[in-house]
Image 1 (cartoon, rainbow, N blue to C red):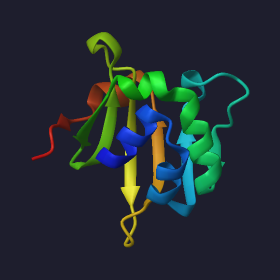
Image 2: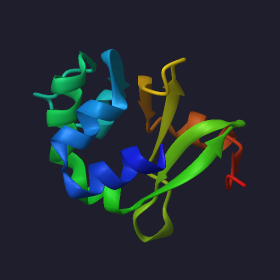
Image 3: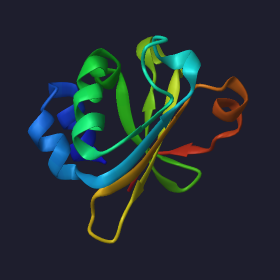
Length: 115
């Protein structure tokens, strides 16, 4: 997750593709993205290329545990905007990225720093 955040901040497509499972699925709340961005995206190359659009948001991110699982909190100016829940597969590649900005989900999520 730390490597994913670093590559996202740099817009490093090649590094992102290596970190993502070939069949990765990324879902996002429509309120967080422009209308032309699909709510669901599949495939390492497509997800990596789309991630480059959001390097500014990635720069406001921090690796956290979200309800005990790996993730990233996006909090520009200290205000929580979104949570990325990340599922890693057996091959240590990211297989699911679920991005939420739903205020209720943000409110009830338990965030802790990884040890």
